[in-house]
Figure 1: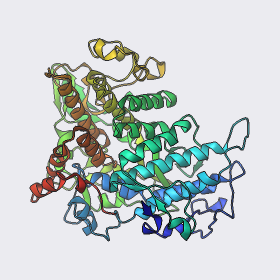
Figure 2 (figure 1 turned 30 degrees about the horizontal axis):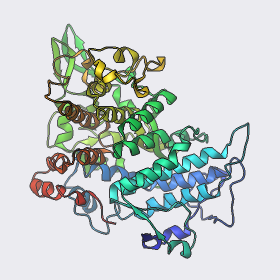
Figure 3 (figure 1 turned 90 degrees about the vertical axis):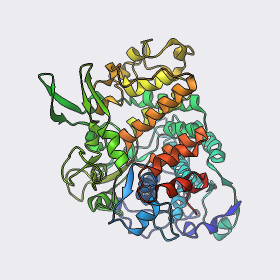
Figure 4 (figure 1 turned 45 degrees about the vertical axis):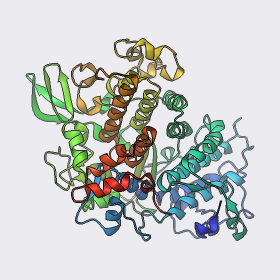
Length: 542
């Protein structure tokens, strides 16, 4: 048990921030409302409160990405990096580190969500619908995601589901949960809400608020995945794909150009737009704001000034992928490096050498291509490729490695699922609903690996499961491919350390994480590896 006032008295003073319609994102407002002053009765009463929550989420965006990537194997620091970035990279974090001592910002999000959840009138009906229920569900989803970030980064959370509005509230004893203890609570809280539509607030400048909400099915899938409930995870991911028509579009493929049956050295690059939501249907959820209001996100500045840079591991992941054109023509190089990293801070270039301070192009794309204050900036949390890769991870652990490989190689559609050469009957025998991709909206689905590595869907030489002695060996082989695909597709997006941690914990093998992370170091590789062999060192100190 723990008292909230040991976390931060800040929570007692900021139950809610409201703003005027003309200054919707102007965070300088000093207007505060407390539980005895305001109740949510009208259908749009929660508009301002939701924007208050969005503003609180913005404070988490840089930490979310940097803690997920600098502690992983794909990002590292340079000589120009700040002391605090080097601390994170070296797992030697001081109490003053601004990226880790901001736990009060996480609890501020939770407290704001609790305030709305506790005060909203979900019985209000308009047009035959309980219109306030949308905001109620949205706040529970944001709260669940925030609790998950605390548990995964710090190892445990102090849990409370009522707003903290007084010293008396703060001095109460509250339970402390690990991720495994927290997950069942969040799951039971979210299950009744997974079919509730998200709120509709429209756009402010180029900031589309539709992407500011966390799909409950995605959250449930992640909670199930972390706790080993793989069929439930696969079901939630699949149903979200179906409900929202999420597919891996061939329009985002990048391809090496071929003339007279030879590579020309030129490429057609489309994948870069999968990270810039202005040009893609990949986006599901982002933390966003306008360039006119709210604090600036730092990620684009950090890469522009070479304070963070891709590791050699990240560069090699793209550089040495087998690009397959046909059974007689192939080369090296996954084209998703374009738009991920670059030797230039102004234009896309393909990585050609190691030991350079590359720019992380994804961070430069958090702002739109037009430099105006009436535009949005965003850090992506969920997108379609991540959804499919999480689905692949779940079905693979259901002893369906060929089905999981098909997500990467062939694409989830009826043609793939009916091909017994691709997916043997033993993996299809249970006819589970999460394997049903017969709906016509999935017809154009392609494999994620095809986005940057050519026609791997017809490759029978390189990209396949070898003859393994046991099903366990096949599952682990494909799981390693999924982890590699996460690096190729979602590098620098904030997930990497937790992806490695999830697999290492699943296998009860700390070396799975320790070896991969230590590989990016030069002078202190063995010291980092030794430290990471202790799972307690995977978590930040509160």
